[in-house]
Each structure stands twice: as structure tokens, then as C-alpha cells.
Length: 54
Image 1 (tube, rainbow, N blue to C red):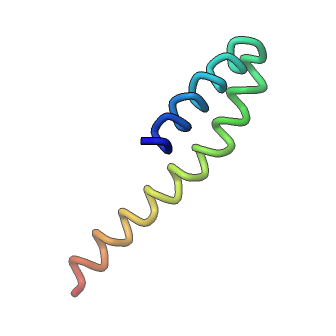
Image 2 (cartoon, rainbow, N blue to C red):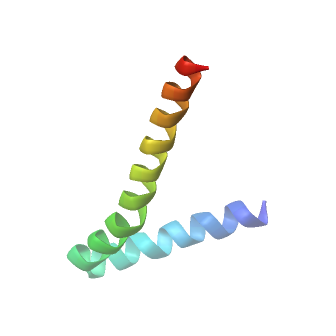
């Protein structure tokens, strides 16, 4: 529960930051989640391909 509360408060804080610095906040979030999403995409494709070959 404590982790969830921390995550929600962090989301609220980031949303406030985004409201103040929209472009900068967006770039930072994209920098973090963009690379993470690319990593997830690649790993999912690797699982699919290796699952077919095995």
C-alpha cells in the first residue's frame, strides 16, 4: 500500500510539474518511458520469435 501511495503522489507531482513546464516535462517523461516502451516492444517480439522457433 505504501508503494502505491508513493506512486500516486509521484504521479500527482509529475502532473503538477507538467502543468508548469509542459514541454520540458513531456520531454523528460518521453525520454524515460519512450526507451522503456521500446525495450518492452523488443523483448515481446523476441519472445514471440523464439517461441515460434523452439
